[in-house]
Length: 426
Image 1 (tube, rainbow, N blue to C red):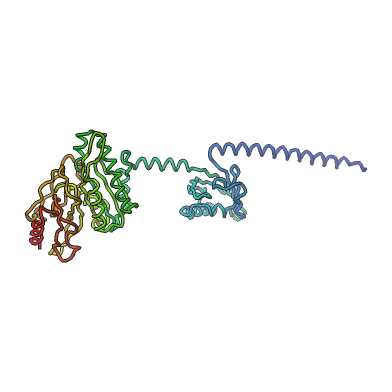
Image 2: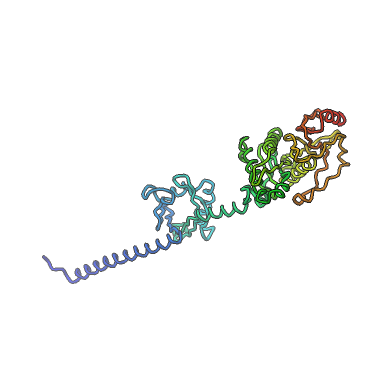
C-alpha cells in the first residue's frame, strides 16, 4: 500500500475538519431555528419565505396546512395553494397589495385578510412581508415575512362592537346601532315602524321598575316572535329608548305591514304576567315607507314618530300609516292613514271619537307632546285624520283612485258617522 504524501494527508485532514465544522454549524443552526420557532410560536408569529420565480412557499416554524386543518404533508406549500385558500371577498385586495410590493410600488407588503380552512371556518391573518432579494433587473426573487393568526382578536373586537351596539336589557340594537341605519338609504318598500308603549308608566308605578324591565323584555321578544311567525326574518329591530321601539321591515306592501301591526296589537291586548301581578300595556304604532320619505331614514323616522303620536293622541293601541294624499287641487300633502288593531281595551280610557268633520288641513295645529314622553323629535303632523275609537268600522273611499285616498281601516263612533264624513269629504 502506497504511503500517502504529506500533501494528501493535509488535504484529508482539512476535509475532515470541514465536515466537523459543517456538522457543528448544522447543529448550531438547528438550535437557533428551534429557539426562533419557539420564540415566534410564543408571540403567535409565523415566519414564511416565498421564492417568487418557482412559487415555493416555506413556513419555518409552522407546518404548512395545519392552520387550515390539514395534516402534515397533505397540502403542498406553494403560492397557488395559498392563493386558493384566500377568502373570496379578500383575494383581490391581498393579491393587489402583494403585486404592488413585488413591483416596487410599496416599501412593504402588509394586509389583514381571511383564509378558509378545510372545514369552511375562517382564520383572520395579519400578513406582512418584504422583498429581501432581487436580480440584476430588479425583479423580486425572494420575499420574507410573517403572518399572525388574529382570529381571537377579531372575535373579541366583534363582541365589543356587539356590546356597544346592543341594548343590555332586551338584546335588541340600541341607539348607537340606529345611528348606523342613517347611513343607508331606505328602500321604497322598506317600512320604518315606531312603537311607543301605552300604560308603561302605570306598570312602573304599580309594580316597580323591575317589573317594568320585565315588560320591556316581553314586548321585545313578543314583537320579534310575531315577525318570525309571519316569515319575516331579515329585519332590523331596536330599542329606541325608554319604552320606545323601532323596526325596519324590508319588502313590505301596505296590506302586509297592516297585517303585521294588527298581529302585534292582538298579541298585546291581553295582560302580561310579570312579578307581582298582571301588567297591562298597549302599543301606539306609527309607520312610514321609504318611498314616502324620499328614501331618507331621518325623514322616515320623523314621519313614523308623528304617525305614532297621532295614535297616542287619538285613543292609543292602534296604528297609522304615513303616506302622501292627493287632493283636488292636484297638490300632495302628508296625511296619516288611521287603522285600528283591535278593540281598544277599556283600561286605556280612550278619548271619544269626533263625530264632526275634521278641520281643514291649513287650520289644524299640532298638539304638544306630553312631557312624560321622550323629548320630541318634531311636532305632530298637521294632516287631518280620524281618531282611533273603540269599534272598528270599514271606511268608504273618498276618491276614485285608491292610491290617492286614505288607505286602511278608519275608525269612528259608528258606521253612520263614517258614511256621513265620507259624503262630506266628497
